[in-house]
Structures are given as structure tokens and as C-alpha cells.
Length: 425
Length: 149
Image 1: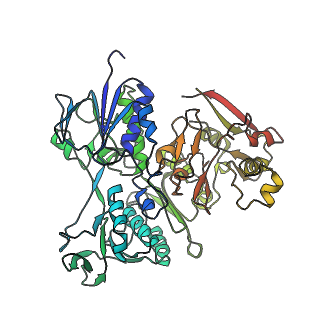
Image 2: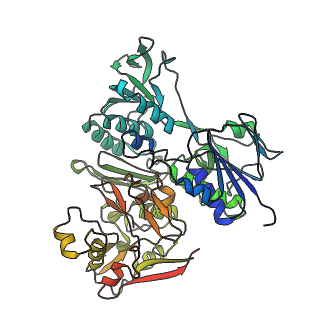
């Protein structure tokens, strides 16, 4: 390469981190700058719930050691907010006025929490969202003031917040507007098993209801009034109904945006040399066979890495995203991969094994002999084999029964398939 | 860069699981089979796993992939690919979310449910020949060395 390229990455999440790794696999010389509006270099975002109850600490929260960035010649700019992107001039503008020029840009701005308007919330210091280190630290700082909390949202973020709060001795009530928790990532049976396990641990879950109003003395929360009219005593309210892709910067720069920032098969936006990855992007999805926002960490890291490689000239097609979630609550392990609630008219077959007494549940979603989705509760060993079979569109005809049992492995496949699948990739 | 990993020849695997035992001993505190099995309070789990189905058996361990899915999926950065090509897990950072278990296409990341930590093949640190390979009585396990990428 004759010219030293300038790479700029906006966003300090796992997609940005993946991009650093991807760029450096291809280009050892280019100048890389990562800009984040947060106060920290890339840290474990899902780790904030573990941090809150002490399973992770300030030393173990960073995704990589400080030496990682220096070692790869990466400049990390923290507390730096990007205000606009000058696509023609090839520079980003930051708050404070400094422009940073780029030859290749990655927009990995992630998602921002959706904050529903709640009457009476203004001016209260114990209303929180739960997506950043800062959020967790703010809750941590006020933990002595919080004896009872209400969490709005029974998705992954809300439930991890509830678990962490429960672990530090807070009495928690979770409100979910749908008729079940985990409705995006899991099906009803799995959601109910998780709800049972959370209930045993002392977390109350109320479905088909949400928070409408906060009653306070102007300073301190007294109770949360629900849509149903019911009210719950609480000192804090956590808003965790979901995140939406942060697309404003891209939009402002004239970059095509759908739900997320639209990218092509190489993860480039409609503007040459500007790429997007992670929770902010809308990239090709293997199951849906179209572009889709799939805000999960493995996709973000992988997209970031692939985008980084392509920014550095690798010119490779992104393999496509696959939704998957691994989450455990109080010893109940759960994994979902791909399509878990297929449309009824989609021609899918659903196979199920449920042992409620043992909290074991398995579900396979198949079509024409191929696996499209799996839910594993209780027995999650070797779940990655399921993911790889979905990703590669491998025929599982004849293996279904074994896959429903907890013992499924490579030995149950025909030898040719086994040997092919066990090749190092 | 040369990478190394262990594979099994299923034609000669007899399913004796001595590889698993050797792995446990190698990763125990005392590295002594009797002490490890009889006296150690917390015996490590084997990093290799023998799958068995009737006459077919084989040990399956980490391939130490070039672009490891377990590393991409790890939520805390505990799972890392080292400069020597080995994929290892930093148990200080592991929170037992099992994202790596969900991601590994070989089913090669084990789960220590008691401690909620992932366990996986580390190619036995400084050992020239991994303990499982050395222990295999029928030479079913072999170390493969190849160029990465």
C-alpha cells in the first residue's frame, strides 16, 4: 500500500473493537482512531449487570487491556462526541470543534435506550436506563437509597437489571407489556420457565401492564402507578423497554437509513468508504434473507471485524447475521438461536421436548429437513453445533430425535457429514 | 504462524476416556492422578470431551480457529486468541453466560456449572505433547500442525 490510510471508528462498543482487529489483520500500517462519547475504552456492555453485583469489577470490565490499543497503534479518544460527518471532505466533526480526517470511516454508534414518557419523572435522580457503564455506576452510587425498584421491560436488559438488583438486596418488580417475558428472543414456554426461576429467586413479574406515573415528594420516589391502576411502592425506576439504532449521525450525513444504517454485502453504506456495523446497522440476515437490525453482541463483533477487513481492502462478502442469545438466570441456562417463533403459514415444523419438573425444554424449528431455529433451556451443552447447522443450511433429516435429547453430538451424524463438519475452519 | 490442535482418528478410538482423565490430571493442582481424584477439593473438568454412540466414539477438542466464533461471542473479552494461535479463556473475566458454548461449531467449550466458568482446551501450556495425546493408548489422538489462515 503506497499511502498510509487513516481509519476512523465512531463508537466504543464491540463492533468498534472488532473493526480494530479486522483492520489490523489486513493493514498493519494505517492510522486508526476510535472515538467514543463514553468515558471508557470498549468495555463489556452486557457486563454492567455483573458489575452491579460485583461479579465483574473495574479491572475486569474492559474488553481488552489498555496495552492492546497501544500495541496495535490505535488512538482511543474517550468523552468525545461526534457532531457530524462531512462525507465530501472526509472528516468527522467533534464537540469542541476538532475535525478528524478519515480515508475510511466506520459508524458503530450502537443503540440508544427507548425512554417512554412517564408522568412525574422529571427532576428525579432514581430514574435510570440500563445500557451503559455510566448507568450501572449511577445505580451503584445510589444503592443505599434503593430498597425497592420497578423495572419496566421484561426483555434481556430488563431481566439482567432485575437479577443484578435482586442480588444486591433490592426488592424488584418487573413490568412487561406483553403476556410473557423475553418475547423477542425466546418463545412462551422458555419465557415461562425463566419467569418461574426468577420468581423463585424473589423477583416479581407482572405481565400485560406497564408504568404510567411516578408518585414522589418531588425529590424521592414513593410509588409507581401502573396502567392497570395498581400501584407499587418503590425507590427507583429502571427503564429497559429496548434500544433503537442510533442513526442520527448517518442520517445527517445523507447516508441511507432504514430502521438501521443500511449496508451492502461488504458492509459499506451507500457512501463510498463509509461503513457501518453493530447494533446501529441493518445488514443481511441469514434466516430472513434480507437486511435486518439484529442487535446482538456476536453479530456486532463479527460485523465490526468484517467491516474492518473490508475497509482495509479485503473485499469480502459478509456471511450474514444470525440472531442468538445465551442467558442464564439463577442456574437456569437458556439459549435461543435463529427463528424461535415461526409464522404459522410459513411451512415450518416445530418439534418440542418439555420436562417441566426438571426445567428442561428443547424446541427445533425445521423446514424441508433443515434447521431454522432452536431453543435450549436447562441443557445447553454443545449448542454451537445447532447454530452451525442453521448457519450452513445443513440437512438434519433423521437427526431430529437425537437433537431433542440432551446428548446430541457429532457421533449421531453420518460419518461423511461428521468428518466434513469437524474440519478446522 | 503455525497453529496446533488435537484431532481424533475415530477408526482407532476405543472410547476409554483416558484422554479426559489425563486432561483432568494435567489441569489439577497436584498433577497427580490419585491426589487429583481423591483429595483435591475442586477437581477440574476435562477440556476434551469423548462423544459416544454405539461403536462410534471420538474425542472432540478445540480447533483453535483462525477466526474463533467463541471469541466474537464472548461478552466480557474473557475468551481470547493469543499471538501463539491458542484460544484461551481468562477465568477472572468469565461470567458463565455460555455465549461461547452457543457459538462454538464443534461443541468444544465445556461448562463448569458450579463455578459458572467456561472450560476449554489450552493445549496444555508448555507441554510439547498435550496430555490427552500422550495418554491415548491406541494413538487415536494426534497433534496437527499447520499454517494459520
